[in-house]
Length: 317
Image 1 (cartoon, one colour):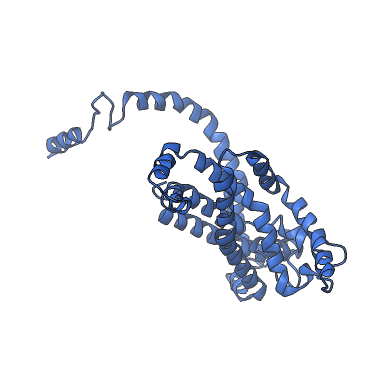
Image 2 (tube, one colour):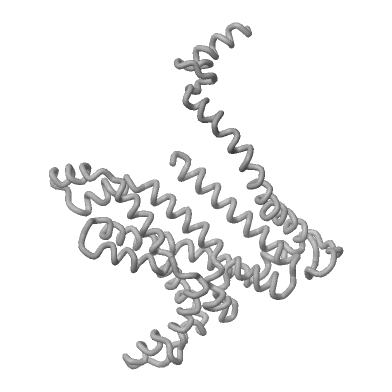
């Protein structure tokens, strides 16, 4: 029995054709041996920092979420899962969750198609394309807090550009960030403006990797611009599109720096995201136990979406 298994192992590549063990080539074994000292030197410090600043805080947050604690002294008032029950019963958190879902939908249906359309035009070597790439990418380089403050003035109903333009065509002063039904859409417009340049540059990089001979052959065969885009460009960019969608989902769940200077979650808590809700109700109001429960919920949602998306759509990338 053992002899048969050993023979089968050798037949499946127990030793590779060039002498490596377990199907590994000599070059792979040499690379592994040369990399091992580097891993031994640099991996432990990285793991130590990751453990101290990521793993331990996550564990502490999970532990504190079972207490009614304001952050001072030691947590002693154990309340079990009541913090989690209050999270899902709180209308503001449900609004924040809905806003996060809306941001994801707008990012996928508006931001990414806009970035792909512009990338398809600017990837071509035409005069001025580099200038337009820079212009469209600049909002992403701008700090989120600075962008939020700038757009807060733009949307101001007294002297902002949007309100003044609206008054110039005969309208009343328009306070976009003060109206509950308009505020979230104003925020979504800023989000699209701020981040589409990042996705555009991803698509430009992917487009430049496509072999030009494929496009030339399609032109010789009489393919139209739409046919080339949908039958050649888009399939070859599929992995880049999936990566861009992944970044949009994760970024939408983590959105914080842009919201706080822009609306602070208002008016009437209508523009909160899960992270701004955590900050407002868990940190500002010193409800650390409740804020930890919100953080745990946010972590579970983010991890579940990230791993589910990668397992379904990015397994082969």
